Amino acid sequence: MRPPYMRIPYTDVLAAPTIIPRSATALSGALAAVHEFFIAPSLSSSSSGTRPSIAVLTGAGISVASGLADYRGTNGTYRVNKTYRPIYYHEFLHNHEARKRYWARSFLGWTTLHKAKPNATHFAIKHLNDLGLIQSVITQNVDSFHSQAHPSLPTVELHGYLRSCVCTSCQEELPRDDFQNELARLNPTWAAFLQEILASGALDTENPDEQRARGMKTNPDGDVDLPGAQYTQFRYPACPRCLVNPPLTENGTRATVEVDSDGAWAPPSTAGILKPAVVMFGESIKHSVKAAADKVVNDADKLLVLGTSLATYSAWRLAKQAKDQNKPIAIVNLGGVRGEDVFFADLDPSQQGSQGARVEFSTNELLPALVDQLRQYPSVQTAHTTSNYIAETHETSVFKDMLS
Ligand SMILES: [Zn+2]
Image (cartoon, rainbow, N blue to C red; front, side):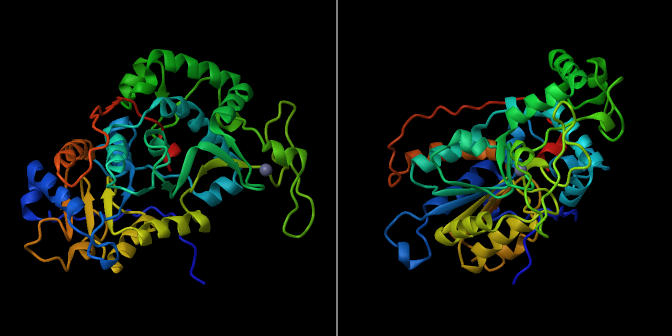
């Protein structure tokens, strides 16, 4: 049996990309190349005569315009905060203190994330689907923007989603909003502070000086320094289902689930721990999710990669899988992509995008323009002619731990 695919940070420096075709260094050339990628007939004979089926693989880069930090971009987490270290699954699972700190940070960051909206890239993907040009999406993002922008376009959320919490014992899911309300109830001092800093706008900036001026002091680790409220005293709820009916353990005995007088998970407990429904670093991706992502790649004729350095192996191997199946790949990303040479090594030097493309532009700059171009293209049916992109931009940021 193959080992599970685990989510592990990849921290090597990525080489600058080679732009393909060479004419794609200018925006007009990049547009032409990706346009060619979209309309060129599929190489596989099975779909000759029909429009190629294109799958999209997205990453943190496409959510930057919504105010979320990516990892390796100009203001990416790994560049801005050199000491940044995401929480690991085993740490979350086995360390009550680590969970307190995680949930305290998450409690303060949730409202900002909740307010953030999909941007022009997500809506361009919707429009490309409306035009019959994109059939499915795989995303590494946990922000739920895809499902908000294009609920009818099938999307595999490879690394889960923050909109829910999931019990690590019984797998019960509950809405993150409800969990947030419980955190507020269990931590009234924090809840009052959150209202203050929301009102002052301290969460609308990542600049520590501006944050301090708006009433929020952070220490060098990025932790909020809140007088009268300690991370060590932060409380979080237990899984309501496990509390009522403690699960059986592996050796057949009944697990212990205890709460304090207010309902907060208490340390003697051996089960009922809720975690965000995301795949944490060091955690395996569920087999069903991995199989769904594999199927998307297998069923597609081409793969369009947007806003990701493919630094996570679970995402990189999907692109490799497409390549191994001789499917053209186009990558739109600011900055290098892990091992990208392998995707383009055997292309005909004179091809203009039909076999593959590598361009370095913001997806928010390129994709809406691409949609407009493709709408004008004779063979692309223009069933939907509205071209109103909802370009929501937020100059906000959220605590990075939430996106891990
Ligand atoms: Zn449970």
